Length: 336
Ligand code: 5MM
Image (tube, rainbow, N blue to C red; front, side, top):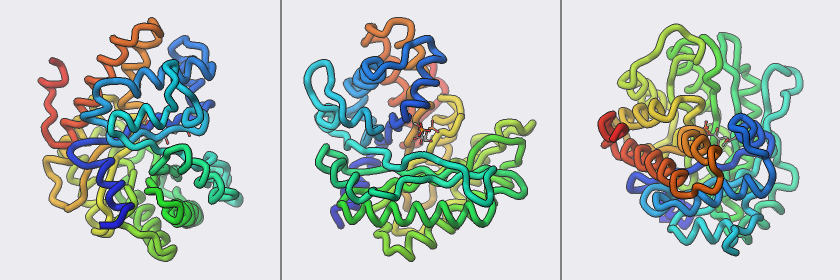
């Protein structure tokens, strides 16, 4: 077993999942403003250290994805953030892309940037304690999108990023996200997601990336968020598994889904069905941002000093997601 494979398995085994707390300052400001909290570096740290000190960090969370500001912060009790995360047994990770920009010659689409100077930044993050990284490609969906150009250029960037990350002895999370925005059907989501993931692996293989030392972070197969239809949880799991079986090489140890705008309960229910029906060798778990933090943020915003209530809310969400990662979640447990 390679060192990279060991790290990947430590993050995603035994029902553990990933907390995606890597919102850039722009996104975090939107989230905090929406609940009436001032987005200062101190408040961003306070919310995040409250989550990272929660009980569920030991049982449920295998890895935390951080943003550059957070990985450099010191907690109110004097620990570095990576030390706080490691002390619960979880692995600190870091988002290393610098965001999605308009794609030249197809400006309605995006290309993710951040390759310039990446080798040097990775060295610094390793020294700070990071052992895995994340890079997200975003794809607009409709009959004509994503274009071949967007599919190819994002796959190429994801592969170049992954090769550099493995050279720095860290595990790359490869996140190709076909967005939920639109009135498209789940059939179109299946077709486009398969095309996107297949191209990613073509490029990863071309760049000699060790597939046993990556984690794939894809979207689930869903109807668009403006569609009048809504696929059932059972169908989500069947179509998602069909897509991954057909497009992901078997060397990949695990798949950690993004929540993509699903509600907290939907994201747990769909992951649960996926695990109940999982007939592959892939570990299937979560790497949720909104679907792990939304309720906790709302509770925290009512009193930012109420650590206990915030942590209780976060503990419950993480526990539900971990049950779902084992196929043991139920509505009854959700409402207990
Ligand atoms: C946590 O949000 C991440 C994006 O932040 P920026 O847009 O500020 O860079 C995002 O990459 C996230 O990690 C994934 O999309 C998963 O998050 P969700 O909320 O979709 O589970």
